[in-house]
Amino acid sequence: MTNGAQSGTGGTYAGDITVQETWETLKKDPDAILVDVRTNAEWAYVGLPDLSPLGKKVYPISWVLFPDMSRNTNFIDDVAASQPNRDAPIFFLCRSGVRSIAAAEAATQAGYKNSYNVLDGFEGSPDQDGHRGRLGGWKAADLNWKQG
Image (cartoon, rainbow, N blue to C red; front, side, top):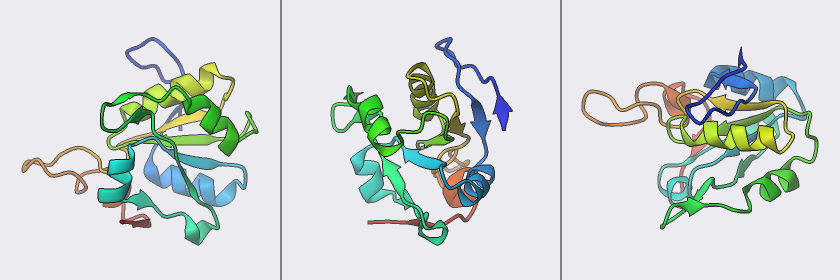
């Protein structure tokens, strides 16, 4: 884990973490959770991480709302309902690792001191053909996920 990460907005959060480190921490720490901050359209059409082998679930809490992409004003309340322990690790995941930085910053500002951005997100960066899911990210790491 990389501690003290900074984003372009000047906020701080606990750091960046790879998808493999995220999986291992979720496996070892019973209090750690994964929050997928993508939109309902992305969850439905692209897929969601599957934590059932770990006996856990993913918390789908959109950072922005589809279709107008307005900020989810209930985001922190939804996080608090999912994880009341403000000391537990929370891993924020988006498509490629951008929205999840903003989510980790907001959670940190709300008192969640162990808020992490999952590097490369669910789909990673586009390849030379413009396709995601092949270079980096949850899917490319061959971690459990499901679609539909």
